[in-house]
Amino acid sequence: MTDSAVDDPLLRSGEGRSDPGEVIRLLGSHRSIRRYTAEPIPDGLLEDLIRAGQGAASSSFIQAYSVVRVSRPEARAAIARAAGNQPWIEQAPVFLVFCADLARVEIACVRQGAGSLEGWSEHGLGAVVDCALMAQGVMVAAESVGLGGVFIGGIRNDPQLVVDELALPALVLPLFGMCLGWPDESPEVKPRQPLDLVLHQDRYRAPAPGAIDAYDRTMAEYYARRGNKARRSDWSATTAKAVQGKRREHLLGFMQRVGFFRK
Image 1 (tube, rainbow, N blue to C red):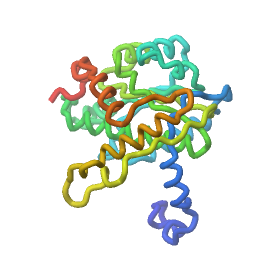
Image 2: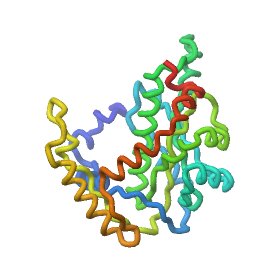
Image 3: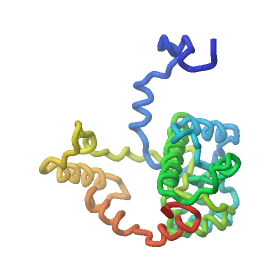
């Protein structure tokens, strides 16, 4: 018998698998956690989380990602300021930076006589997708053992600072950070959009009349009951502010300088 999963009698019979309901409940319970206890995350557990993330699908199995654990207080402080003064970057027991990494891919290409990478968009996009899938696996694995965390897109405010602090070489693009720790808060799960807005059958369809208004009312009620964080807003208002306020005009030029999306 081989080591292949399809030859595993437990998997063929369905025995030994996790309860699918439990996994679905875990995925649906995600919340951003920004306050943590002082309890550290053991190194061995963090390594297990990274290995779990590596189980994600990878385009052509290129595995075009790298993760940098940032422990130096001065580096964390600089990144926290650049990310919009987010104190949890400094306070979390673990802070990781996830990077789309084509450097190892280029080594493989050169060794095989296929030449250096030229910055084709397909390669960059594949690396970004690989990294995002891998990071989501890390977060889900973390939450499965009781940890909590939050993704930090604010590192893209000043990606050159991140490159400098972490000594990232060409073809390594910092995409986002992740804070992890044992939760010291228990926020309510944000209501996601109704399935009718997300799931389409055969052809894309525009939202039904009133569907976004209804979701705005749901989110307005959620924001209104958030205790000392209560505010008057809804999904449309927060989305418009977030998207139009975070254009980051410098990003395309930066990505091209480090070898991404040139063509």
